Amino acid sequence: MAAAEPLTPDFYRYPWHPLCAADLDGELVRARWADGTELAAHAWWLRENVVAEGAVDPVTREGTLDPATFAADLSLCRVAVGEDGALELDWSDGFGGRIHPGWLRHVADGQHQVNAWLPALEPWTGADLAEPPTFDGARVLVDDGVLLEWLEALVRLGIGRLENLPAEEGTVLAVADRIGVQRSTNFGLDFPVKAEILANDENSTANTTLRLGPHTDLPTREVPPGFQLLHCIENTVAGGWSRMTDGAAVARHLVTHEPETYEALTSLRWIFFNRSREHDHRWSGPLLDGGRDGTPLTIRAFYPVRAFPDMDERDVPRAYRAAKRFNELCADERFQIGYPFRPGDLVGFDNRRVLHGRDAFDAGGGRRYLRGCYLDRDEVLSRLRVLRRRAQESSSPRSTT
Image 1: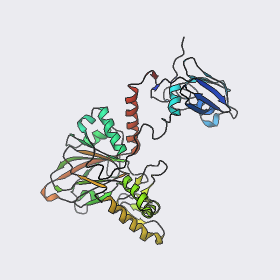
Image 2: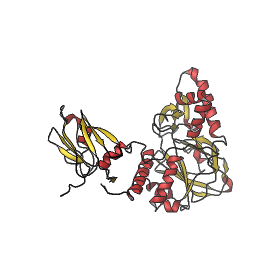
Image 3: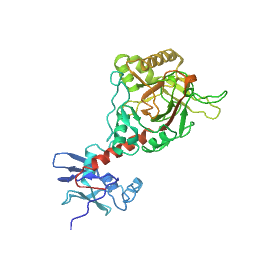
Image 4: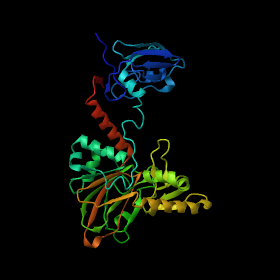
């Protein structure tokens, strides 16, 4: 009777890629496939990843082994390839098991890495996009295929617009629910954006009729929200066009053409501080934070809350000149796009990469009412990975969970 296919340490399904050989090389197992692909895996790592009682729990698919419990001399005493191509192993502590060769192959192919199943980021300028890429919002609410297309645009370009959504309160949260858990802030789980500030009312510059220059939200936080959704419920005012700039494209320009400005923006720190009687969020960081060695770029550029230089006094003049230059570029038509908000439109964007703003408007001749919410970057990336994997699984050959 053929052995059952081994479970994998997660809930994905993997094509069956049978091994052709596996040899013990000191503390490593060198597993090989017929096409020449090889994976070197440590004996202890393999021990952790057998799905069975005493290693990976078959129900939760999480590891149960505390590294402190490993015997110092724990080693493999048998390594073999089963008749079906699975990896068969026995350890010196008497534990044995089989490992799915397709799961091993996904590690060999790098599909376990952080950026696996995600599109590559694609910086854009005003010459590349005339307006945000647009999708049918009504279908996003019910169709995972259209949701996948929108999320791919959000991650790849940092921006994507939905149209044909209900122009009513609650819609922005319904769209967010299709992605993951919303991030609540001092503004609430979702929040209004409309020019209705009363006398002595604490609120936000966003809830005025003023022009808002290019900025990112909540740089006062250690980790600002990763994505923002803004949904238009009503817009009958003159003016108030939304503006978007890809900070990744501006950073790329600075690296190539203005390296001294880029150095100041990435090294000189400011304290960002929200002004409120009930909240005191503060964080110190450069205007361009991260973006190297795979770290997501975080742009901290909301000038209403950029409160104090946090640097040597000799650096303050060049820090201001760099901030001025950065905002000049972000508002330059070479990098910026503009569009009106129509009732039923929702624009999602990467809040740590794409700077948003708006033109001033006249509230006396109408009403402009948007509703927004935030999601952490992790939620968007998680949902996108799952949808991409499911799309592949639907067409995969022999596989197992």
